[in-house]
Length: 369
Image (tube, rainbow, N blue to C red; front, side):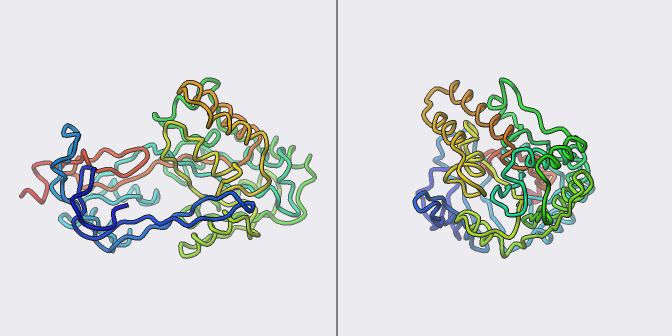
């Protein structure tokens, strides 16, 4: 949080104008446990100057000044970086549907990174009229999805199939071995068999998605209809309702959906289950939709108690394997994070956050002409 100008910053840059603040709202879960919902509050412009006293001189800063334009919508920002120079140098969180436009640009290039993020479905294991409390039904939902086709058709190849909830990145490779998990295979026949064994559903399955993932919801619904022979109702949560939807989910209030697609990241690359698995399954998890799972709680407590990195990795693998085998979420993909970057800007993305300390510009950049 940087909420006032001043020389106090210990990072590579010092705030000189505006503010960028993350506020947290506590939510009571099960009467005692708490989680926190975050909201972002940013001024229209945030300006940073290089911190000449930054401790890691080899890293940077390599820019004299950075200006964040928070008053631009993404479409306008993309116009500026792709079709002109001098106004916008980097656009973050480029939608996958716009990747080809950036590739065709004369002024910008597409930069991607395997981020520590998971796009998955929260499954309401308490849903009336559906067998989602049965692990066979949850496995059926996973087996019915063709992840390779999803990556190709909805992400233009810029995503990787999820096995469990730990995204496949270079930073998390240790937490995906030994006994490396593999994504649920696309097996419509087995999915249909398992769904029938549960007794099936007495009503349509309600599939919802936060707005950025509307196309993914449409894809998944079509696959469920074809493989399982069920009716699926798709709804999209608009941006202005996203916070309330997340708050109601965290507070375990009645839900208007049976499966909700959302993306979650992890800042804890050393031990991803501390955030990702807790959020989807844990007692205090803001995305848990169903009863507390005693086995998961025991495995999670064992992970938290470890001080050895090796033992943390082993404990994390146990959790990921258990969550996957029990199909405690709909595992979809780990989307790459996309940036549109001016061709004269050297920018290397990070897997967990947006950093500019080691970003620099080339001689041809408009600011040096």
